[in-house]
Image 1: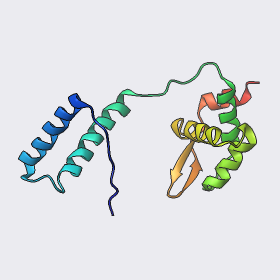
Image 2: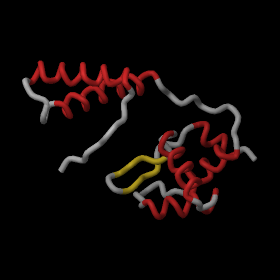
Image 3: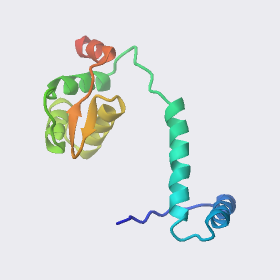
Image 4: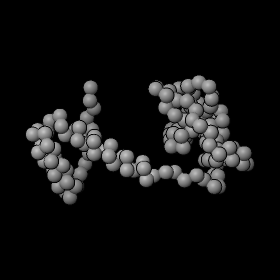
Length: 138
């Protein structure tokens, strides 16, 4: 079952939106069923461009955030998957357990590929050189 997603567009963006809808109608002869397909194709194309041009630079100095990420990384099991609750416990032990902190560190772990989604759970990612350095720095 599909989910409904809504967006807001200003007057100038509305013109572009309508051009896109009209182009979809010209291509398929209809809007229903075809428009969401074309929107998703446009999103995928733009995402591919963003991901190709965007890379996170490797830190050369380490903040407490980087050191905590490294500490969390080294507490994660290397040989098995773990669930969200386990991950939150490891984050809480190193950085605190309020919602913003959990979100910040979970995102950091995912962005730096320190954890990888494995179905409905996670597994530890590859160790990177900077993680070793941040873990050693005091």
